[in-house]
Image (cartoon, rainbow, N blue to C red; front, side, top):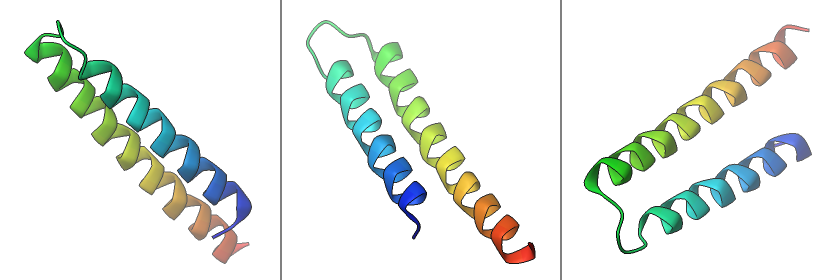
Length: 61
């Protein structure tokens, strides 16, 4: 992995952990928890897509 990919991965994991920690606090509704889970799943899906797109661009250039 390149340094850009590693940095992006670390930042993504940090953001996901912070989001999950924020939602786990008392007083949050089930809807807020569901939205947080969906957001984390979308973050990882976009991260994976960006990694694949980056590899394709590097391989074809």
